Image (cartoon, rainbow, N blue to C red; front, top):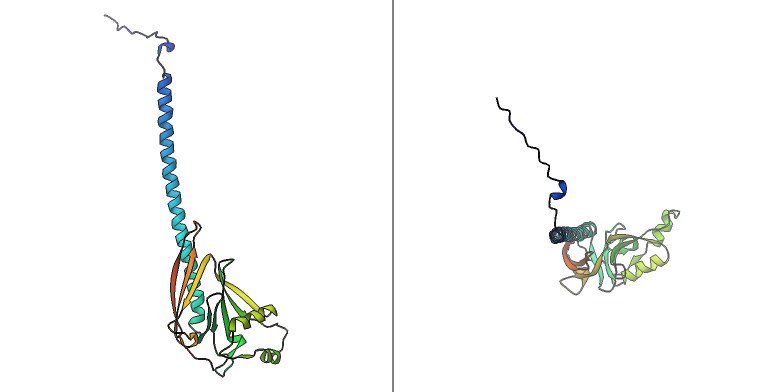
Length: 216
């Protein structure tokens, strides 16, 4: 009976051919090209996500501003003053009955171009004052008054507090249908909201004064 014969190769490992220098350079070049393509794709995706995030952030800030301003206009009685270089003043309510504007009923909305902030300011008297002291100080303002300057004077005296409504603005514009703001029952506000990439665009808002009252 014949037994099978097995042959064991004795070929030396040094006989196996390796990569040539040219093949190695080509392989490195291909790897680099693939890596560059992946990096470019990832960067584009990241930029797209950042841009979308900026847009969402801008819209969120604009929405927050709308909600906060509407809290004033929904119960507000009149637009008292509109100054494109400073801001606008609202008659919030007639908490001191009589149909006339008192300091405590005044809300001033300011735009600070240096910070890009829209803020609200109101009168806040010292807690230690008696009720009589508060009533005597809460003077009545004539409808023709410069309401913004009146609030600025109270700020200088240390009797106001400010709250930020929205930041990141590059401009604003308040429009009415007629020349006398105190007769208007509807106002239109445009806010230029800036994103982190330096672009900005107007966000339009409309507010109705459903309790409109002309001050006496």
